[in-house]
Image (cartoon, rainbow, N blue to C red):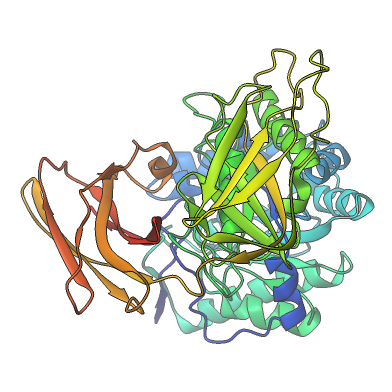
Length: 530
């Protein structure tokens, strides 16, 4: 007998890059590091019900299972699915690749498979929807990505094996049949649709999928299963190896018509900015309605991202991390000797207002120039005599930059999204940031002792540290959480250690250590006590 444990999209998947081997080509991983974003599409037969994709089958009654597997396909007809329009919108929003759910855990196949009748061609739709997606994505000039789940609840159901995520027990013969079934499906996907650029493997066992797909398509980039894919969250600090974060546009992966909360366009743009500042790619998920159309709110969010990207594309395309990723609400990306200072929390920055920022990690070089992406900084609508020029001044503490928000994007003159300052020919003011490690927490009741440690901090003018903390209500809720509460700054011990007591805590909380270097707050990773 054999067993396997599985971890899927709606579970807490922090890091799925712990595979036994990685045959990704270096040039493919470099491509991802230079890629700002991709579009994730979750779509399955249960979109008709507007519920979580596949997971409702775990713990379901026999009646539920029978009707799910036998009745839902009879009414699934996504006849308004227009992958060309979706691909064009994704491209406008700066996405360079689209990953589509070929098969989620339910086992329902969105292609014309010969392995099972539980597929899209046996529905009223009849056509190979996956082929339509592939053709449209290629026509738009985007890279083609497949999501594939080796977990298959329909296979378990047919073999009268209890549907589970954590303890699926198979005898040797059934295990071989299961692996052969998975292998045949992967062979169809890799042989019948031309060049596939990206693969996202969700669930276990991954090894059969990896072996088959790398053998048939050696240049495919496997993400989950080979590299880090922190889910529904971003890493607490920059990561050097390639990574991507799959994050939903609302709370659900599949379309959820009720009880859904969509993130604002500003929040989604800020997630893209933060991901790029930390060296990663944002994989933003949408879920079509049962008829195949994108919900109006999802389309609206993508168009807001598209507007921001149209203006500011060069600060996220083919950029690297700066010596630090941010100073307070200002995030950084770099390209050669040029730096992009991305000013978030800009909703109150009115059109026509001049603002000044001191950048402590930046110093002027030879022929330094300052500009604002998207605008010429020479004139502003209806104010012909107003000075909207950009300027800078090197001070002993940092680079003082002064710019005007001078471009009209919305009719009401209230564009709420990040403004990007381009600084050409600048240098880092610090050679290397201090390394901040968030330590363990010891909690008793509503009190806790938080600990942290600094490395490489000697001679770097680092003497103080503190913590930030807030309530934690679950991985999906993290992106809707309250603002951080900061402890007072305190002195660091000679060995780099520091700790502090906090009170009035709720049941679960997340926290991170922070050090002060040259007036810059350098953050460690985030930990959770739940």
